[in-house]
Figure 1: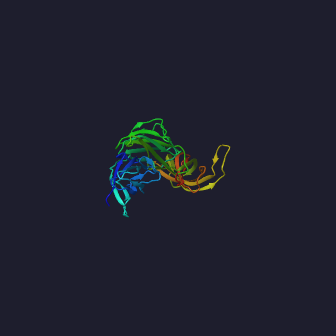
Figure 2: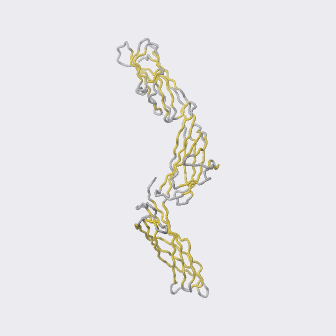
Length: 402
């Protein structure tokens, strides 16, 4: 039906950023000669807007319990009388397609018996919404690390939004088993000293469509009972809002994950006396003895928890390891043309490794014997002595996460 109310809608700022709060004002004027009643002013806001609760004002008087979406009630409007309804809206996202809303007035004429309501619509207010945004990528040059390993991180920060970003402040969530290497922190290739990444470091400003490159190194300084660790990055920054105030926003990147299994080891030494088989040529001179080792079996035994007078600590568990060592003897034969000959020997070993304190009993174990040194000498033309120095290593993966 014919509208008797003129609605004029204005906005406090037309160029705004996501998370900004703007104020709409709707002026309702009774342009008819009749007194109007049961007036409801409402606005179905688009999905990128959020009504700020408690922000309704009618002629500068607060109406806390009113909501612009369900409607603001005005009992009557006399001819030529006007009311100004103000309300705040927060921009919660940038719309893919701008949808402009109109305010609506629903009302009835006081001296009229008609049952149907009349309606009036306001003009639309066009908004230009800009969005501050950071894209952060983070990589490490290693996926697995052991004690004393050096991990090199690269973080690339891209301003892929529509605003210049100011006062970027980066905080690194670094597990206690990792330590920042002094002097390794760099911004765009420039070293920055005396930084504490856990407390945070200022990394400057970044203009629209610009990029920052951050590099730093961490060292594994202790073992962890958690084999999968997270290293997260958080960046806080500021941007200039439409009312020339600085707003703060937080950005967290996808966390990088590291596999740092518990590592424990023990050095052992094995002595052997070997005699070459009958039918093989005598030894004139030993050229070399090479050795390789493999763990054939292992099992866990429970022990007391105590410390000996000599300082040896029993954690409560030992790993008993059995294996074989294969030796390859290369020698010059005691034959008239002194040809080069080889002979292979095998020996067995058994030893133990004290497992770490609070060792998770159902962990996955990887046992590897590593040959460190082989010492040998010739006893006579048929026999030689050999000593193998070996490192028994155990990687313990719990499979648990932070």
